Amino acid sequence: MKPLSKLSLCGVAFLMSGTIACSLWGRYEPVDRDREIEAFTNRGGYHKPNYSASSTYETWLHGDIPIAITIRIPNAPGKLPVVVYLPGLGEDTDHGELWKRAWVQSGYVVVSIQPKKYGEALWTNNRVKPGDYKSVGRKTFSQQALEDRLSQLKWTLEKLASRVHSGNERYGNIDLGLMALVGYDLGAQTAMALAGEKVDLNLPDPIPSFRSAIMISPHADPELDQVPGRYADVRMPLLLITSEDDFDPAKISTPESRKSIWAKVPQGEKYLLLFERANHRLLSGTMSNSSYWSEVIGSMPLTGSSGMHTCLSGWPH
Image (cartoon, rainbow, N blue to C red; front, side, top):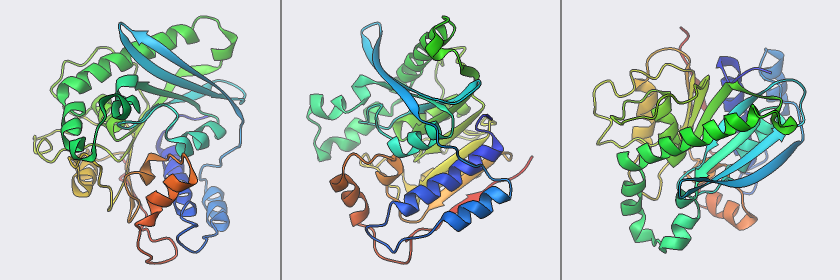
């Protein structure tokens, strides 16, 4: 089993593009991806197994801060690499199911982490209305909030490491030396800071190192992205996923500002997966029920068999 490095980042991108395209069956003509996937794997592309998994959901207390954590361990042999998944604003650890299911079936342990104050409780406890989204976004994407989340993530990973090294048979095949970091929306802001983005914060040190990172609908405030060299220290293999229709309710980031991250990251193993009409909620990978999915794709105009343009690009060292 390999960590999410150059080859498997390409596989993840191909898998996600196929998953999104196939999910549009209610709006577009069905697309047969079997032949494309076979050709991809024959050229050395990643071939996904189909492991089952066991899951645990817990709440850990960091002082008085409850942190939700879900751990899914595939029934695969040997030492298993880990994907740490950070959900978006207003999401719990059961969100992003489409992506996490694919990773677990491929043999990756998936650890989802979300402080409860940023999960669904954010909407229910604070009675947030649509007109409040921007002010809530400014607060939760602020530097102080980011620093708090990084501290909470560091503590959670340390607690996870102590459990892995405790001798508990359930965690015996988890390899924390092979970790990839994935973030969506709010989680992508946290992940990008760990990947090397200059955020001018007092970051907790040390935080366990990650081999690669995936940013889904990354946070990119146009007002802050003018800082020279903001992404100059991002050196790990990076996959950035967004779309031309990636507008979030907080209206802070824009599709253009999200795409601009890729151009500013130094040359190396960096990839951009760009969809034409996958909106912000579709990129969350969450399908809670059929009405949710209908809402996600309902506003997409009919422009062809898939209504999307997929671009995967990268520069070698």
